[in-house]
Length: 209
Image (cartoon, rainbow, N blue to C red; front, side, top):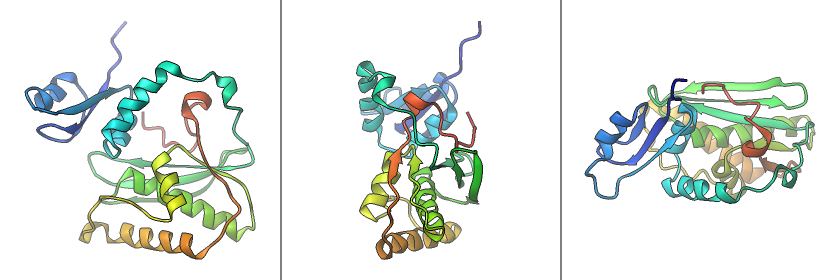
């Protein structure tokens, strides 16, 4: 049986990025003091990790050793909206979408937006879902698999490190509008974590594994 391919995220090394072989990764980290890197089972996981903190993924790996049983997480509420984003590590563009979980009907899809990040997409997807449900006077909960985006929504602030430029002005306009919407609106909807380890892949995932 052929060995399953792994993908390698390099946070700190000669060149930050996602590499599809250990040899390519090794060139970036070997001999580099304090190099930070980690292997992932899929390219999508590796790309998402690149936009997040290295230590988060080290701690996550350690926590898997004491993983809770599935019974600790009852099935998600089918009467809900689930959202996700996708980021292309080559083109640096992002898109996001939202689905009604019970029927898998797609409610919205936006992008791709150039020079954006996955965290921004996850955040915009949640806010888009909140605004969409408010227009319908709906209190359905929203699921996202991004703890970062959920925290941004809770704090009503997009804590991105991405710098604004001429190529991503539209994304920053959307961010500004999303933050303003959160500051100006109240909503009854709960924003919940989609527990991938227990429920499987987020149904709004773009399927680019």
